[in-house]
Image 1 (cartoon, rainbow, N blue to C red):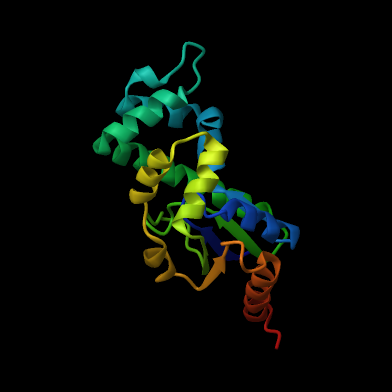
Image 2: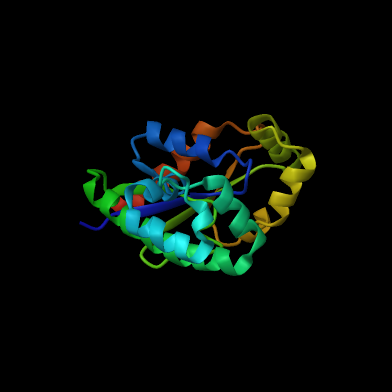
Length: 202
């Protein structure tokens, strides 16, 4: 059974996870690709072993689990290691998403991902792209409060991601999460437009 796939994306601090929660509340099953990637290390010993081979055995804790801090340090400081790790993890996420999507009863499913626009993954082909936007100063404020980071640290992470303008250029729909426009009507409008196409309703 083929399903219509919505990609919901946005930069750090844009509030895309909150937007995804609203989609869920409206009956759309949603797959968190970032959470799935993290859990795959625990569920797939072969993936963990392959990642350790390219990132170094130091990423394996004494109990045999992934040392996420060590892995993050390796891929942040070495772009070649990051590329090799992504080449292993992204296909695993695509396979996991495909299995998950087949289990859903809905004709429409959603995948939440921060990087899928920047780094397309074979096996995940969204039919619609929803980009969540917010002013940079507000994004920095949100992440500082959430992650106990300094504004400089958050600004650096933002600078390493695509800009909102780059994302919006590839979007089918945008959601303004600045706080000045109610979210629910925006998301409901998007969903009704997609359902009109999927179900052929006027």
